[in-house]
Image (cartoon, rainbow, N blue to C red; front, side, top):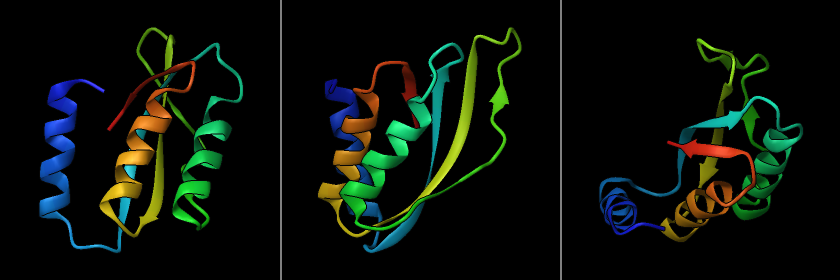
Length: 97
């Protein structure tokens, strides 16, 4: 995790009141199959609750990337950090916001 990402996550913990529902935008490379399922499984494992996601991804202008909206109930700053770092480490994930 970069220093700027760590700083941003630190400030998120100060701004949010836990537990809270957060919608994450996950951008993946279009040719990677199963990336969203892996990301959702990790988020469910960390949060201990089911996540909801948009059924239809949005495709980038050139078709190289897909973006998904995934909503999860986050109960602590540690879980929030785990979701960001864990999902970002999955092969094929380009960004998580």
